[in-house]
Length: 559
Ligand code: FES
Image 1 (spheres, protein in one colour):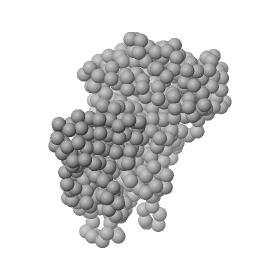
Image 2 (cartoon, protein in one colour; image 1 turned 180 degrees about the vertical axis):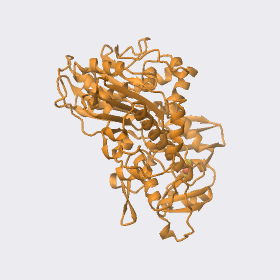
Image 3 (cartoon, rainbow, N blue to C red; image 1 turned 135 degrees about the vertical axis):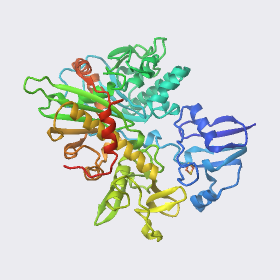
Image 4 (spheres, rainbow, N blue to C red; image 1 turned 90 degrees about the horizontal axis):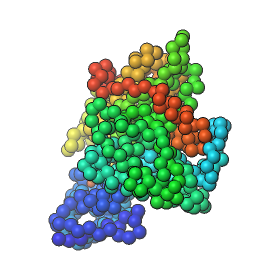
């Protein structure tokens, strides 16, 4: 029996954990994260090659492995930095998580991805609450918020933080499972605590007090709203996945779960409005996107694609020849590749992430967020990497990495080489870092892209329209912020004819929550959208499966 003390950047006091030794430092650290409600490291290579589990650790430890000696710089080794996946704890030990990139989602590093907030010209009639209001986009991965003064159209402050429920899994399915296994109260407390923290930060930035917040509006997917209200998730967990609550009502901040528990930062009587959902899979976040982009006013067909772990897709078809206007929604499980997750060198779109790669005069050039040293690839960097490698002939149409015979280190950048674990394409390399794409990474990207592209094709076929008639393809989600149309076209990210009309629309879900907060008329509009929208299920669709297989190919699309 021994003790592990973990110094988290997110906690003022160290956390002490009783451990059985010997044990993996990686596992023990993750256990401490889980107990503290801090996003743990997701295991990447687990074999000492990706270098993503660096942390300073001291105490009774196993000897350094060959992988650590190769991966860590002399300075890091002298400073006590180890690779957690390579280190065994043999007795009392201490981990200083703050010295490493303890989480890709360290709150301070995240940015609200927005095309520019402000509701100027959008408000028909100001809501009649007093004091301050907070609009929240409660995402599966992150929580973003805006603070407004009543009767105004510009936010006073913005803030974003990781959703601490990530400790129970990165996707909604694992969180539903955790809730059904008796952890609904823990999930509820975690998210309430996070929203309290977010509101306090928003108020601190604006120089006001959280106690003066009297109204909150929350946009989220259906599962997140179930967990926020501690509802029984049974109805959304199994076929026919018919949600027994679609929200679209207000609760008291201090009583979100019907047991007199809820938010603590604001007055317990403050009103919390939960935007309406369409179904178990099409949530209030999609409704908020439709509302904020005002696509119903468009005279041409329009598509919204919210690119995340689950890509929600909306197709609006205007009224024509006596046919009523339609809003058709679907959701395709893209996997987390568009968010840079579950990729060996993947990371969130924060400082150090390669976000864009372009071929300039036949050579690959990349840009890194924050002009920092590259430390990984975010979603848009992944798209660009696959596309550039494809253009260079290092990956073929089926997605297979074509190994080069070239052994010259200089030439290895953007070259595919053989590796102990299989083929890999090296994108960046210096004495301490190597960023490369494995065959599995390319496959993960193909799955995400095929899911999105096939989903879009199915919607267009269902609506019996031509993809070329779509006037605008709105892209939401962090991935879309830096996305390159040219690279998307090269790998066939969208069906033929759609890419040239693509436009990034920022966090449209948060914008929708802000409209509902500040505009008295927006609630009725959101309700009407939720009622009017129809859901097209892709699950079990033979057509989707056939298109999915076709869309796996990394084939240039036609404009
Ligand atoms: S997870 Fe430890 S080096 Fe990759």
